[in-house]
Length: 58
Length: 343
Image (cartoon, rainbow over all chains, first blue to last red; front, top):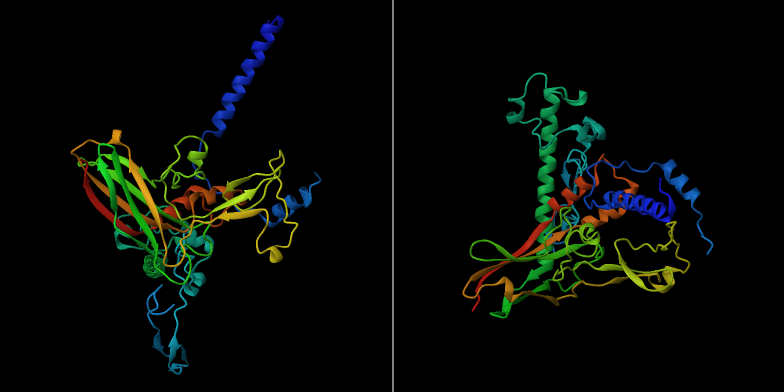
């Protein structure tokens, strides 16, 4: 199964296409969600701040 | 403010307060009601603030009170069955009637705020008549001026990068068929500018004729160049989103150096002219068309909600719900209509 470069390339391209389709499906909706988004808690904000350095080295 | 919002109309005169049932000495009364352009989008049991309401139920309980459903009105209470699934806090019919009384008072106050808001905005913005420049086989061209009605400051003012003041222009034939539209909304409630999610994602075309007085933030990018953004936050185009802090003192420069605004406001007593054109292939010679132009004010664009939604929203509100309330609170300040026959 999938012998030779054509088979492997075909499998690779196929998987890529499937991935692409999924990606497109995930990004297609421009509509705002009707699901409530709870406010970040104080702990979540502090955890977020600690995870990211204030000055990022370039 | 004086007697009339947005106009030098003099001040009322009288006691400023009652102290132990005695009026204070008469004096000039200035009006400190800030009626707009912002408006409330949350539950009327929570805002406008009310001591009685706060003592009666908690915020979470007020959020359960179904105002639109008609709770506490005869029309609703007389038609429901005994086993209607009310939450525990509102199981008593007396509570629902008391709650409705408080809600009705709050709604009256919101209505008053809307009336004053529209008064100040209508004094701040004026609209000229429609001027038809061409109506023949080469197309239909027309223009209209949006005028700053005040000599005090630019309009919109202050928070002008979030203020939506725009023209909604519709041209219809005599059968009511729309042949041209600008300033219409996408399904989220945004106008079709670059910040609309639908335009950004290529699901709707850009509105090239859109007339809006919303200033836009223009942000300097990491390696030069600038771009329009919803929020005035410099971000690096990197795999790891990173908010870069401002290294220079804003107080000395007068503004953050990495961000600026594309100003679209109108200076005092000046105007901006909106021009619109319907291409000839959309028109029929000899046909009469109606031009309908609305000047609309909305406190913030819907795309701002999308930009800030990651931090979440209070009172259990969803982004779409907030967007609907923001659009519902918008006001048509002026409408101009005219008819034109294409030669």
